Every structure is written in structure tokens, then in C-alpha cells.
Image 1 (cartoon, rainbow, N blue to C red):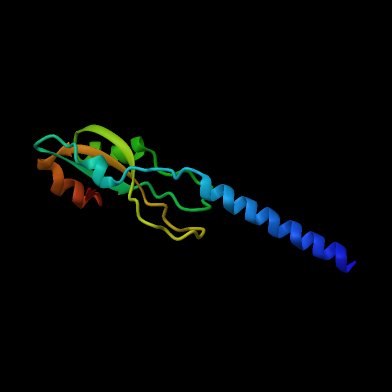
Image 2 (cartoon, rainbow, N blue to C red):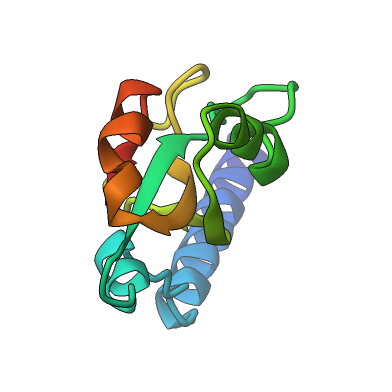
Amino acid sequence: MKTSCNALLFLGFFLISQTLAAAARAKPVISRSIAAETTTAPAGSLWIGKSDQSTSCNTQKALSLEETAKELKTAGIKYSKQKKVYDNKMHIAMCGADKGIKNSYLISAQDETKAVSLGFEKL
């Protein structure tokens, strides 16, 4: 009995070490930061964003770009581009925690105060 327990324990440690070694060899996923996403705004324009409300372990869908864009359209704010961006911050791995994903829009700099009053932030 003791020998079979030791063999199982050894097998477990072996499998864990192989998994860790494979993870160390894997190429890291490179995501672009908000800074990289927002540096290409033409003169007179700026990127704004608002959380898409995606959380870890959440079975509900995050807010789509179109859903958040309705808020801008209702306020009379026109946008020329839209995309999802990641804040590149570390987020706690816990159910209900924010994932750091924002719906972002390229708008005229003149509409910044209107967008901020709707809860958007300059990126």
C-alpha cells in the first residue's frame, strides 16, 4: 500500500513539473495597451472609453460596442471608430472581479465634456 501511494505521489509531482515546464516554454500572449491603442487619434479627436462590465465567472454577456454606442448617439455624440481595448493592468482572479476591458470610441475633442458626463473617460 505504501509503495503504491509513493508511486502515485511521484507520478503527481512528475505531471506537475512537466506542466510547469511546458508553460515556461509557451510564448506569452501580447496584448496592446490602451496607450498603444490611443496614440493614433487624429488632431481634434480623442479616444474615450467605458467599462464593458465584463467580470470573471460571469455568465452574462458583457456590454457590446453597439450597446454602449447608443448612449453616445442619444447624447448627440458622433464617433468615427470603435473597438474594445484592455487596460493592461493586473486584475484579481476572483468571481465578480472586473476584467479591465473597455468599449472605446474615437470622438471629436469638442464632445469630451458630454462624454465624461455620461461616465466615459478619456483614454
